[in-house]
Length: 141
Image (spheres, rainbow, N blue to C red):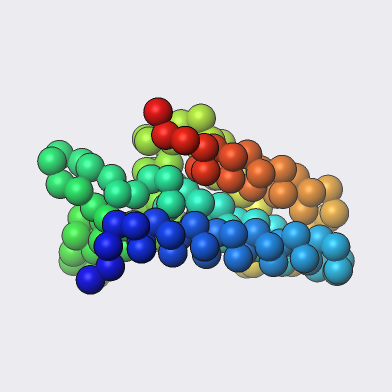
């Protein structure tokens, strides 16, 4: 079983890895859809780093996956993980909820609707990621 510190470090390492890929793509390519996608997945891991462990009704969840599987145990009735994560962000991270949800929507468009993403949209995704990263890696108060 992973310790609290290992779970947090894994989320942060994964976030930084995706952020580095996003930066690399920005400098090396015109694949703006992948810049948006890597920005979103980086933000997802930053969110999980900051949010967990999470205590709800005297139960402590060490990770998003633990929360998701314990709270939505009936597989056939589980909501989409992205929607569940967004609701947690809306409730517990109000100050960056807009950034996260906007980035999620941009990524969805890039992956499933239209991969022809503009450079300004990719640049906007990086700004949103930067805001999320700053919030999620700042010292908790």
